[in-house]
Image 1: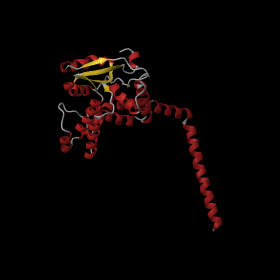
Image 2 (image 1 turned 120 degrees about the vertical axis):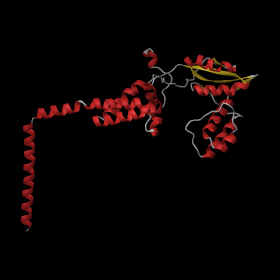
Image 3 (image 1 turned 60 degrees about the vertical axis):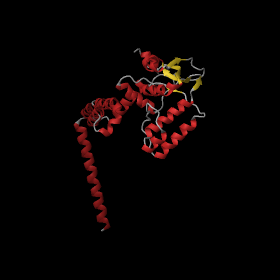
Length: 281
C-alpha cells in the first residue's frame, strides 16, 4: 500500500441501501455483521418502538457489552422475560434504522456511508435478498464519518489507542503511526529499566496467548505492550555506560576526598555538641 494511503483515512462513499420491504430486516442484519456501514438515523413515528425497547433494557439493570441481533425478529417482551439485554439493545438500534427508511412502492431505502472499497463486497452479500447498495453523490458541506485502517494486528492495536481520544477529522492525516511511535517511546522512557521491560514483555506474551483469561479482552493491545517493553530495555542500555564513564572521569581520588571531608564535618559537629553539653552542666 502506498504511503499516501497509509497516512490518510479510509475513503468513504455516500450510499443508499435499497431493499424490498420483506428483506429490509435481513439486509440490515447482514450489514451489521459486516460492521463497515454507518447508516443514518432519524426520529419519527417508529421512534416510540426504539424508546420502549431502551426502557426495557434499563428495567433489566444490565448494561450489554455489545448489542446483538437475531436473524428472525424476536418478541421484545419475551426477551425481557429471559433477561437478554444484548438482544434488546440490538433491537433498539435496528428499530432506529428502520424508522429512518424512506418507503416507495415495494422497496425501502436508507442512506449512509460505506468505505468505497467495501461496496462490491457488501453488494455480493446482499444479492440473494434482492437488495443493493447504490453509490450516491456526497451532500455538500457534510464531512463523512472518519474510519481508520485496521489492517494487521499492530495497526489495529494502535488504532484503538487513537480512537480512545477521539477520531481525527475525515480530511486530516491518519495519526496512527505517529501516535504509535510517540507512545511506545514515551512508555519506554517511563519504564526505562531492563527488569521492568522484562515484566512488560511477559505481560505482552500473556495478552498474545490470552492467558489468564481475565485479560483476554485486551488481546489486541499486545503489540503496544511489546513495543514499550523492547524500548524500555533499549533505552536503559546507555545509562549504566554513562554512569561508569562519569565515575571514571571524576576519578576515585576525588570521591575519596569527598568522603573524608564528610566524615570530618560529622566529627566536628559531634565535638560541638559535646562542648555545649559540658557548658550546660
